[in-house]
Length: 115
Image (cartoon, rainbow, N blue to C red; front, side, top):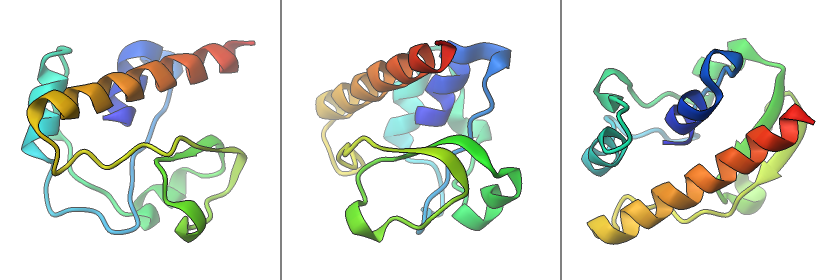
């Protein structure tokens, strides 16, 4: 969701990539529904591994969603940890709360990069 939100808010000026150390086999259906509410179609996306996005490095910013000490390293100028809980098992209402939290954090990050 963070990659999609970055593209929504940042437009053509932002290149965002999403990846995980243990990516799921498919995009979470709740994420597809949550992003459709914002006018973004996640059905065309697929989960990617860190190895798959490493080719785009070095990055200006790498954001982790709360992996603590287990986060793998990626080449970047800046690292940020947001400590956001994984919403995959949450009910629909709480899932949307996490989407909105991500949206606020992405908005703040984009604003800080413009300075």
